[in-house]
Image (cartoon, rainbow, N blue to C red; front, side, top):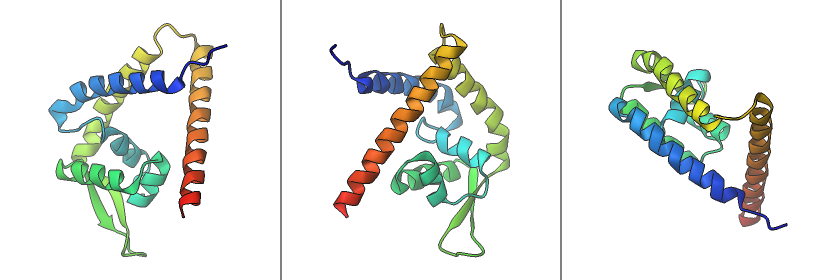
Length: 149
């Protein structure tokens, strides 16, 4: 059996999803690159940028840029860690807190689009497969980085 590339479909889904998200978030000054950080800061208020990077499996430079943009737009603020002055804790501003329901609505809409026509079982299986794929890729990247050290 010829094996089709998972990456082809994942990449196309990602690109199309980014188009929809950018369109919905543009009026709010947030791009598709920032919303994932905003929602995770909401879910884990008080975490550091380093912890946020690890949670999202995204490099520190990308995290720093997204955090800076969200801070500049007034959605979050940073507070120096009292125990370790090298780190800053991340929190939502009132503007950020009031935007979360709108963001959740946008994300729910995207999930509904992605899962349209799927049974509950298909949705569960797809999520499990995607989680496993992510774990596999993260382990491969981690192994690669260890070899480079």
